[in-house]
Image (cartoon, rainbow, N blue to C red; front, side, top):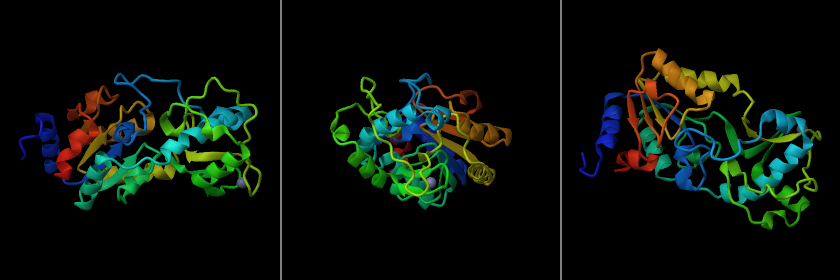
Length: 275
Ligand SMILES: [Zn+2]
């Protein structure tokens, strides 16, 4: 084992040596090195205003105007994000046939871009837009062009980037922002991601739980597990007597259930997989 490994990373290597088939859950901390900001600070509290809820998005045209105006700016940055060392390290784990499944809470598609194939996007993908009436789907990149065309000048405004391709634009007036309806049925278009206040599709959860049942252990990478949709897998692993290791800077909701906690950046903690 290389001497540069810290004691904590060494115990993670040991954990993965001991447990052959691993179920992996990743969160925002895995993508911060790709320039996608995290929602929460080290205490698990909101760093910023919580994101828009499903109910507000579906119920209020003004909320959709505000969402898409912010997203029009945020996407320029988000859509260009590239996988980082953490994504590559986890791809390597899959290539060694050590995964039962990689479940990600991230909506950026970066695991797939790094070459991972056994991936479930628990909360959907931001690169797809979906009609809530007829299920028509279109690429976010195409929708970006439509938004840009209907709202000349908006995309050139400067704003700080925020999670999920959102952007800070609070001072602006959104009433003039044009949001086109579904080109097929004129229904409401929504990013194909699970919003706060919306349930993860049941089939997706069942697939993930089956993969967890097939695993010897679970590894959490870069999630504070504050959202139940992720926490439930740790809970299920603990109930089944499977050891759980977590890499996260700061507290996680599941700290009392962990067999191993590595408080390092994801890239640092997983670096041994790329060696
Ligand atoms: Zn439609």
